[in-house]
Amino acid sequence: MKKLRIAVDGKQYDVEVEILEDDENNVLPSYYNQTAPVNVAPRAAAPAAAAAAAAPRAKKTPTKAAGENELTSPINGVVLEIPTKAGQTVAEGEVVIVLEAMKMKTNISSPKAGEIASINVSLGDRVEAGQSLVTFK
Image (cartoon, rainbow, N blue to C red; front, top):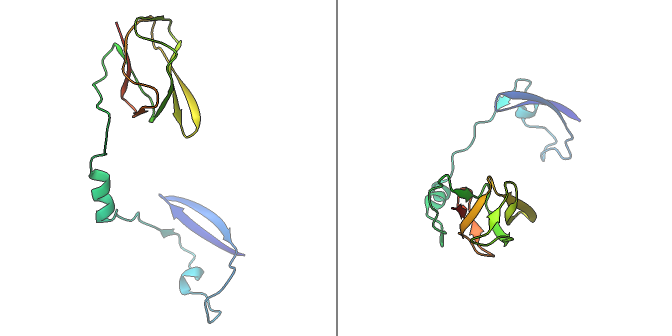
C-alpha cells in the first residue's frame, strides 16, 4: 500500500492506494513519490461537446412562463398518472400529477386549494423542470 495525499477543489484527502503493477522496469514514475498535494484543474470541454450542449434539443415541448395560477414541474420526468381533470376542485396537498424520473414515482401535489382550469400535459409526455403542468382558475 502506498499513502498519498490528494487535493480536490481545495480540500485535501489522505488515501491509501494499492499498486497492483509497476511499469515495465519495475520502477515507479517520480510522481508516485511526491509528498506535496497535487491540484488537478478541471479540463475544458471539448469544442464538439460544447457545441452539442449548446445545440437546441429536438422535439422540445413548448413551455409557458409560470404564473401564480400555474403548477410547474420541479423535476425532469415522464407523466405517469393524471389523477385529476380540468374543472375538478382540489385541496391543498392533493396529488394532481405523478411523474416518473429515474424509475421513481414523484407525486406532484397542489400548492393551493382551487379549481383546475386545464391540465397542460398528457400521459407519457416528457416534461422539464419549470414546465407548466396544471393551470388553476
